[in-house]
Image 1 (cartoon, rainbow, N blue to C red):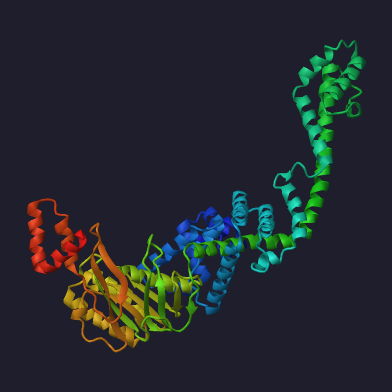
Image 2: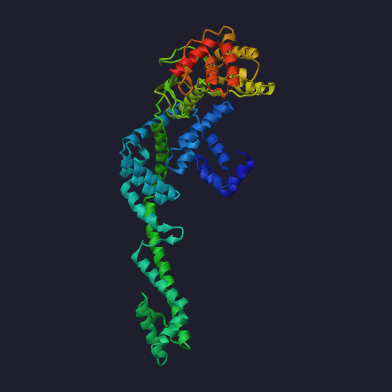
Length: 563
């Protein structure tokens, strides 16, 4: 972080507390110290695994990463769990990837083994913990509630390390020790002293009224008044005659002096007793807390860790995510789904070497086919699978094999056509290919940023460079017919439109056909325009286009829709 942020954290939190906040991914602590949430998130991501963050080689790859974590955080059980999920990073240590996958898989099994009532109890425990702002007492209560709901040390080591009896005793002590002192209910004697002190203070605050009420009893002299005053206090409050007589002055000048002096002495005496008794009770409570300190600390850590693992488990269960097979030299999926679509069509796809059903061995695929055919969506799906696996999270596919990538280059099609965009695009996607390490290239429609002929030349060069550097790549284009012969390690795949639905929507087979050039099939689009034409003149214009793209095909499409 920069020197200004560093100085702010040192001044606000102190160096040790700031380090603790960063190591525990405590976004709230940093934002409370005046760091913006976005800045805090970036700091914690870099602190978690800077090399992993460097794997996000392009802006579009970082956007997919952000979107994935935002989606996962929607299943968080606590605010702190959501913050920790948002700062997960691709992991540069393969053992760390495996460890996180193990934890999420075990948590998912535990979550799915619970019945509805137990799941509700778990959610309620975390809600109460959140509502209490994560206090130690709330953590202890939550840890006990999680164990009672059926989560135990067989799945969550942190919960298994807690001594429930010691924690329950500590919970009682934690309940009563507050920043303002010992809470009511901790000790009967202390509560009794406080009740009598409240009465004494109330009397003192209304001493003039007390004086008048005692006088109304018909007292004749000061001695009579002393007795009547003691009777009144004994009768109207929780204070005893003996307590009044013990502090009553012998040298009062008159009745008013006697009342004020007596009540002031009574309040002082009870305040002293309250202080002494509260100190005794607090010492005992803090001793009980100290005896259970290790278990309390375990409970606090356990609740936060279990919240994260269970939150990720809920994300995995909600989207039917699958543990990928890690390693190898490829990216392959069967039944892969895009997490950002409401009802995605599953597809099989792969590049590189793998053991799944799609073709194996091709390091580069050139993906062609229909407009709105899902080519960009497929690139985004491959990017999501690669990033989730790199973070040690399950992926949206029935089966997946994912190698390790030092850089993920994802570039969406951008609707700009000028030299500046071309230059910035090449500067974004080429350097990761030339760096050391393994790169995954996912690049969409080069022809959108330069003229088609030159785009084909550039794409040929990128395919050759990808193969030469031992990288893997999927390149989307409509220029397959303009490409030079591809290297042996590359293939061309195609997505095909099959017609129009009864609602005149494009009907697409989203599963790419391997080794086949896809067609953009403009006759389907023109058919829809003809069918939706607003008037006769507009219809004639679209029919003219129909003749250009193949009137017979257009008429056949319209006939199929009518049927």
